[in-house]
Image (cartoon, rainbow, N blue to C red; front, side):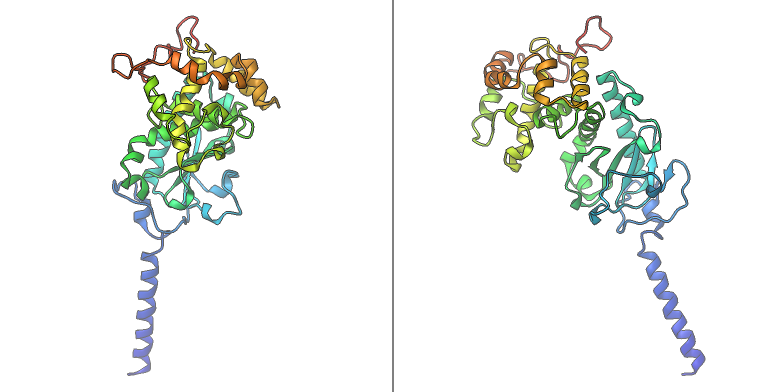
Length: 342
């Protein structure tokens, strides 16, 4: 074989290797960013190399604070979708899936702002860096949905967890509403480090309509209490107080405890009372003091009377005719109604 033939053979091998590298590189894989592909799934590696045209920006130009710079599992593709109130970033989600998440989040925030009677300025959303950040996670190592000071984590619409889980698909909107409510609470002054867990989770379940099925009648409470790991919800300051495997099982009781406070048949508090409580907490007041001042009773009194009050509050049977319908509750009156608690 001549030297020329060897040279040509080497160049062919090199060209083939480069072609393979391009095919398997996420940055060079057009399918990863194909917004017209309905079945597009998350890419394999987190990377993106411009260009950035509105509404897309580089994460490194936004001053992201939600991701930990010391945690390598929080790498992202550096292609952030911006919207009126949100920044959507991901480890490997497609443009199409990010746009879908943006639409879900914006609709959720409209509902939440109406519930609280606030606007984006009340939440301090005034520029790009103050927008709520959503990490739309493709990979399971992100640990599931949860909220932080600047934003929250949910599974991406094109993640395998979402595509393979009927429960996740059914409750994706509820989950976005739930986690976004946590962020709104924080922005109104209700710091997670001060507000007890049952109150924070009960509020989020109430606003979202319930990621988990709400308690609607007293026999459901009686059955729930049979489990020795189920405790009085008012005692839960931090979720770590209860076994992790029953965290979710407490959420319907957290929601019941919160709803009772705002129900005219219960403690008859208002949304304005709630916002004033968060504002006081944000200015340094402790949760126990703020709760008593704005909810009209002490936490100790609520805890000691909780089961008796719930028995009197809830229907005595679970027949359809007597069951409380939390989707159309009498206590959730129209915001515009004169004298409404909401």
